[in-house]
Image 1: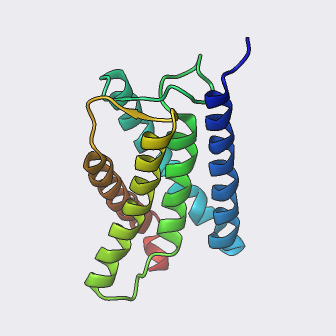
Image 2: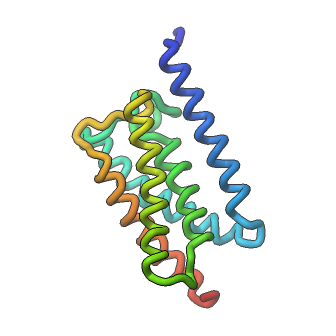
Length: 161
């Protein structure tokens, strides 16, 4: 079956997102903190697996162009790679010794970056389509999952803090 030009474009965009994210992981995850990054990555995968499936199964979001179409209706790229990768970067570069305002801005920045990427993908591609969803739900859920991942990360590595 031949793919349309639009689907091919969207698949190229997904592949570029993967490549950029891999580059960011190499840049922002120090080799001596790889174990820390893996923990943050896996924690976020568990959380986004539950929420991602729930949102898709309730018909709030659709992922018309995605990898592994027969396995799952959610987006492998977003739920299992992009969000967890950014969570690893978030946790390993968290401004631990800064004041509360800087920490708050750090949360806003990270949730905002992913929300902006998602909104642009929703508006200009078929990678994601909001059905009964708004951008602010993504922003809020990302902020909450970042917060929970930070709590888990601190609890797991409490001897190091």
